[in-house]
Amino acid sequence: MRMTFRWYGSDDPVPLEYIAQIPGIDGIVCALYDVPPGVAWTREGVEKTCEQIGRAGLELAVIESIPVHEDIKIGRPDRDRLIDRFIESMRVVGEAGIPVICYNFMPVFDWLRTNLALRMDDGSTALSFAREEMDRIDFSDGTGELPGWAAAYSGDELAALRAAYRDVDSEQLWDNLGYFLERIVPAAGSAGVKLALHPDDPPWPVAGLPRIITSGNAFERVIDLVDHPANGVTLCTGSLGADPQEARDLPETARRIGERGRIHFVHGRNVRTTGEQAFHESVHPFGDVDLAAVLRALQESGFDGPMRPDHGRMIWGERGRPGYGLYDRALGATYLLGLWHGLG
Ligand code: DNO
Image 1 (cartoon, helix red, strand yellow):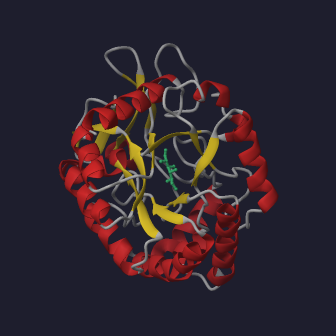
Image 2 (image 1 turned 180 degrees about the vertical axis):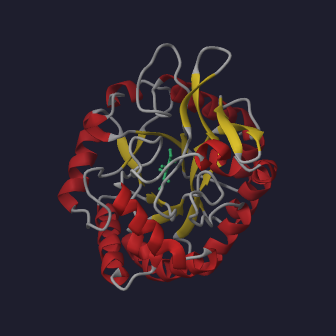
Image 3 (image 1 turned 30 degrees about the horizontal axis):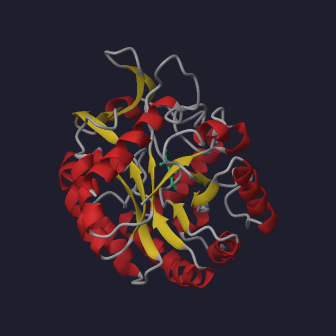
């Protein structure tokens, strides 16, 4: 296992030099954040990022993410052209020697929270989600500054996108994912990269849009769609862990998918359920997910890929990108690494 850390590029308030000081971390998880979805990445762009990371004594170990254009998810006629560009991006990533690409297949929104600074008893703040807060959100003015949404849309853009998804139910979305995988998986194999599909976060439909990568069974369906070593998943313990049954099943999921050799990336994180489709993120060691059991299953199934601590709280007065401060994620990395060494 290789411990890695996510870095958001030159705009990230957390400098690479600080990341390099966290024990056991030498790999960075990053992307070309200035390239919009649907535009092919260039070799120069990837090399520049690799060099910048290399100057801090670190290595670009995982791409998270190459965004998937909405037209691919909706299944619109121009998807073939957009898939070609995704393949081109994978090719330049492979040429740069970066072995893993994380991506997701969530319609319109990426990860989603309704509160970015829920105050905890110890004075720290954490990210949280509650279905009833979500249901109260008025979309008529677009996404605005709402938490955790990677792309911002105006009211009109959002309305048009949601209308386009009206004909895409979850089975249609599976079909569109299958179509995409049939093209990209063999190309990933030729490019020498492994694909790591991230589960939907939270793992249920939101804002009337389907979400399908919501369980260990969904992971299995993904890898069966195109049975090839390059077609794998990101085991994100916090995303699946927001569903209480999935949280309990996570060690078994890790074992099942791990034994097939298809866990290509791990996000270690913990959550506490607070109600029906409601949770807040918790410290890495304590929550609904038994991370020790998950890591044991990974170890026993021979996992040797990259792992990163996922979201942390804001602690010690730090201000920064929600979920992506330095301090609590560094504690998470150290906890995960300690568990890994202790178990091994
Ligand atoms: C949230 C992240 C996600 C993830 C993408 C992968 O913090 O885990 O944004 O990067 O969904 O494509």
